[in-house]
Amino acid sequence: MAVSQVYTAVTGDTITAARWNNEFSNIYSNGTDVAFPLTKAVAGGGYAFTAHGSTTMSSGAPHTMTAGTAYWAKGADIASASTVTLGADGNYYDITGTTTITAFAMTQAGQVFMTQFDGALTLTHNATSFALPGAANITTAAGDRAIWIAESTANARCLVFTKTDGTAIVGGSASTTTQVLTGTDTTTRVTPDALAALWEEGSDVASAGTISLGEGGFFDVTGTTTITDIDFATDKAGRWAWVRFTAALTLTHNSTTLILPTGANITTVADDTALFVSEGSDNVRCYVYHRKSGAPLVAGTVTTLGTEVASTSGTAIDFTGIPAATRSITIMFVGTSTNGTSNIMIQLGDAGGFETTGYSSTCSTDTGGTRAPSTAGFLITASIAAAEAFSGHCRLALEDSSDFTWVASSNLASTAGTSYMMDGAGSKALSAELTQVRLTMVNGTDAFDLGAVNISYHS
Image (cartoon, rainbow, N blue to C red; front, side, top):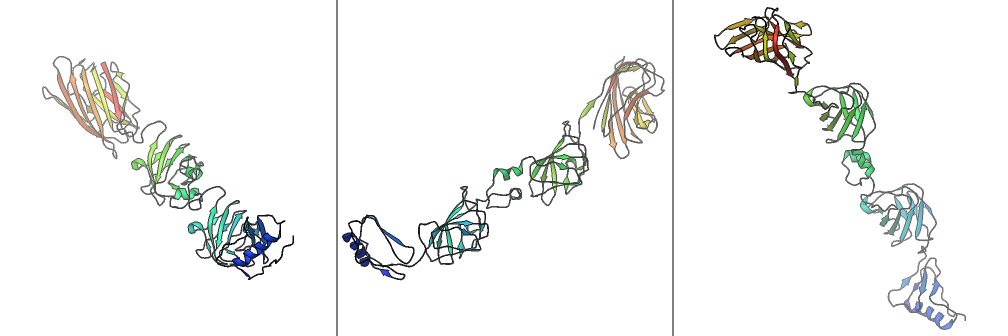
């Protein structure tokens, strides 16, 4: 059946509850072929009203119809621009392109709409005209979505922003490795990849006067060029890195910029390792240095024991090959004797040979007060008989390394017949660093005929 009294609304009309109900009552009473729920399109563009099983509209404020945006429809794609103008064909839009967006132009205040971004672009926060979550700019990714409300035709507020990867807006952007190494950023999140910049193995570094350590916590330093300075490409006090040297080179100590253990230069060997820590302002200190051999940087009190030598023949017994930087030497006698009565003495030598003059030495017995001086060596006996055996030691100590002055003190006991002690002391300045020690007799002709001797030394 035909429907009577059809009303057509135009832009600006006000529809009261009575007029609305009257229209639906006409349709309901005059049209047996009308199906429910019923939808009535209203002229003026965009609004559609649906009556679900009822023709009665609640009384209250009148409803004003204006031409405007179609709701719950997908609008045409919109290209990104500084100001994006929304269409009137829907409330859901794809934003294409990568141009930075600073504003939306909208139809009316209260308009709610959704956007999907099809690419990476920047949304620029403005507290009034373009309010974003977190009050900061947002960099989009393809598939990110947002819900907006128009606070006026020119002011938009983002109510919801959902990243396609599920991360949060505030603190959602990933830290760069530089940010991790600098350690001052408080807004970004740390990814495992960025965090690895603190400890992973970095690229090999060629030795040079100044070397720079980049991303990582462990580096191989190659080559043999002397290093005078080590810096971190991204420096921060407290940053550290392990270094392995692949060849022999010199690390040059500097009391400010490259502080080394013992305050002295270090000569590396392949596979030596070291831990360097920044003290800020490109000043670096070596906190740990490991030699491949396990030996300490400073030998200190490491004592080396020589090989025992039988004192049963010969007019002299020499101990050679004493290493540089030796500070103390002990010569030990066990039942040693000679075939004559010439006193036993000790002579020092350097690379130029044994020195036989310039000694200030005296030895005495504890029985009759016998005293014997010598300038040819350090005397360790004052009066002996043929085949008279002695046991004890003589200790040599470096007193001044600048002029190679050594001092001596000895203590021996006679074990033949009436036992007695002999004590000696003296000093001697060598021409160069000590490298050898000789045991001999004053006359140079008597020979050893019994016992054994040995030597120990330490640096």
